[in-house]
Length: 207
Image (cartoon, rainbow, N blue to C red; front, side, top):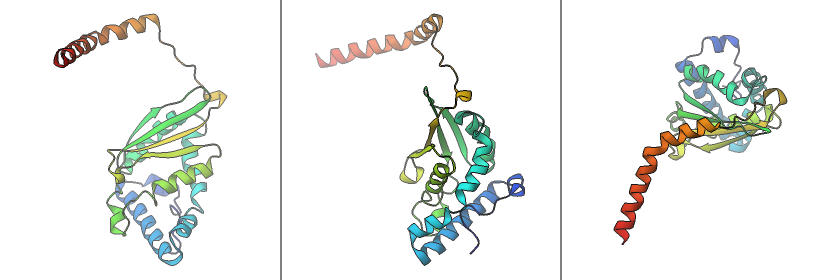
């Protein structure tokens, strides 16, 4: 237990053998380590101590996916490892000119109930908040933010990551063609009629 710091000493063999049960055991080790350290040195100090090795490992693992491509493509390529670990992940590219950005949506939190086994109301402090902090430290210039949490009653966990776009990863913004605009209007026609009907109903009810 004394040697468990951060996410532990994960090596290549751990990744190759990873499955949902091994992932849960890894998270259990983190909760156990945090609880032990918190009882000895306090929660803030426990958080900082567990962060010591985390940024370097985050750089190694996350960097393999995002160093040479956009965040959206990198996170998409990472979906299989999250799936193996028991997560259900969606990725949305929200990049803007000059900004490489992505939303990571986790529909399933496999550690939501584990935290309570260790006397914690939420797993976020030990899992997601450390993940965000490690990402910011591992990748200077990266912004990482938790937007919603299942632990707080939200339907999904959502995280936003953004960084300055690299010239090699910037893709031209696609402008809608005139034909595409016409097609969209045709598709919207039934809804436009429905909006008109709804407005007439409202006017009739309020008259």
